[in-house]
Image (cartoon, rainbow, N blue to C red; front, side):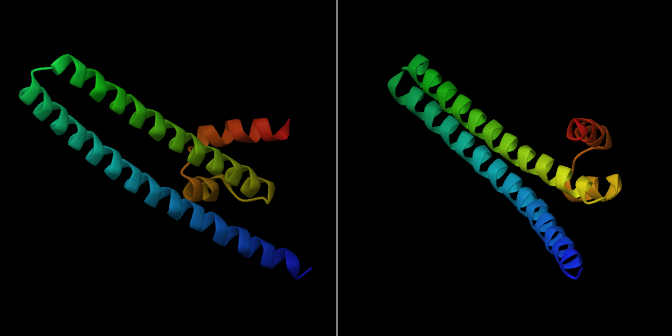
Length: 120
């Protein structure tokens, strides 16, 4: 009987850490992507000015931008999947919607959808 409260405390701590890591990673990722995009844009403009080959540089810049956007989408998908799993686990332990929303950042309407899917 003592194990259940300990397990709940442990799960709460993990949830708190996941939310914290999610926020930190999102900030770091956005900063890195913005910095890389700015550097790439400056480099492409300088290169185009030096070589006069702006079409090739524009293509390279577009490919780089698309690649970074894809990485960002993949990362956001991974984080959202983790948050959904966490929300399902918290709901299965009887946590309130407000508490789940606070810990995961998932909206109430999304929580309703998750609960409906988790029941089936």
